[in-house]
Image (tube, rainbow, N blue to C red; front, side, top):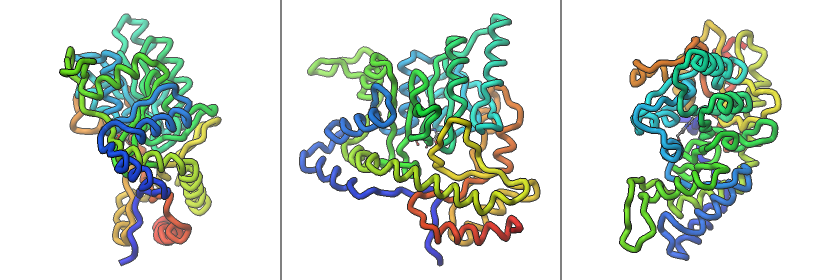
Length: 374
Ligand SMILES: Cc1ncc(COP(=O)(O)O)c(C=O)c1O
């Protein structure tokens, strides 16, 4: 059997084990320690966010974002429908009501026109506005985030950015995750950099971030006997996994460079195919191209491609099934116009690991091209 090609494999830089060793030497085998402090510092320096909190997952970071904004019990939260469940499950953790917004074709991310129409109509008819909007920058590409930010500000809606997949992606040279009141990144095993599992919450608001830090450590008040006025969570990142993060940050720019090269290689070879298109990049934005994603010509099914590649030990994946189409959210309301449904029906994520060499990509292309009739 040929060597397996994964969709998005972890890719170590080399220094990760040294930082883990450092934690062992200091005996900081705990959710506190130098690796955590340094990793948070690296993220702040890299993204320009003023404050950062390393946590156990991206989902935990989104949950904390809702908690620190006081969003709970029947509050309405709008969200991108074209996303992964981790974006929106925290809405349910807090017993809130989701309202999904469809994608546009220019970014494949949340459509600012649909958002504006909905919020302006609510304003005109005196209908309650949502408390927050969770917008996802999917597959490493920027949503139309400046417009979305302006709309949220105008209608007094808190903006939370799910930049789980888009660390390093920028619009007008500003990092995704830093436009909203709060932003999150994920370091799950398949992300552009990984800590095996982990996340980061960022904000320019010191009070919000220090409250999140408090909630992430079981909301323990400052008393030797552990006083509690409210409940929190055990959401801190381990000092061991933060050591992996420290090493990974040293190679993040290289990882983005390689993912973008891989995207360009696919594009050069496949762009000639009638009816096939690649996930676009908005003007003035630079994505991290975490995954190369394509929409197939009408006559081709993503499942056929997936199965053919899988037979040759190559992993690919359908695009995310939109949240409004998930049985879990069958009763949820939203502004849905079919755009993300089409993406789901016609789209596929191609193997995009930064550790792939050009021969790996040629192996994939040699299977794809006959299927695509070229
Ligand atoms: C868009 C998106 N949001 C949220 C998450 C949740 O992150 P985590 O897996 O670290 O909880 C992920 C990734 O897994 C994701 O891809």
